[in-house]
Length: 196
Image (tube, rainbow, N blue to C red; front, top):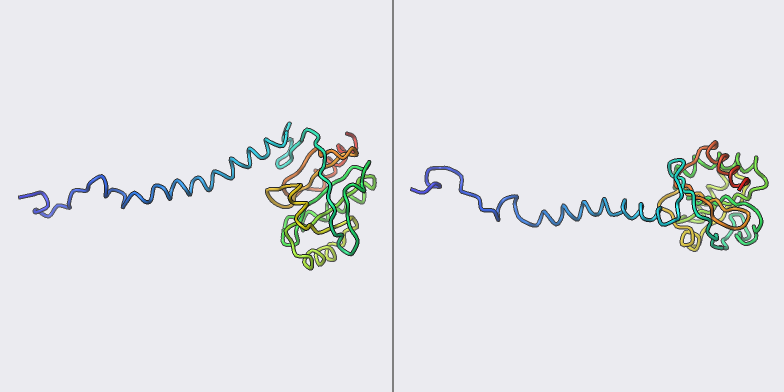
């Protein structure tokens, strides 16, 4: 009488354990899809010439020439980076659908009003023009807002919004901030930009 004849379960072979070999590649793929972007992001930030990260999300950089751009200004006209030569610039990338961007905008406005010797420029990226215009009207900020045609986000890549780039009076990018900033942090960064 064989073992299976007495009511015991049939012996499993190695091949049948775990329900099939197709699950292993799926698990590996899932893990790589989660870990891969983190590895890429670490390499991306490291590749910017980062010297330190004094606050979460901020990257100090070896100075690098700021790429030029020309975008449509919300409300009419154009915004051209090269027109700002000799002036420190705070370039903020935002979108109307971005809640942290909306929450950050009043702090940027107050900081801009206190620092008239710094040019603040906000550019809506990956957004619809009508939604960007409604956002501009709602926030009522006094600094220039424009809408990207795709060239700004290509020249100033980001892993999320808002992202703020700090450009010195020589047209060199000296830092960037991924994520929402408090007014105190932004003020500190602007004063360092002026002192540099």
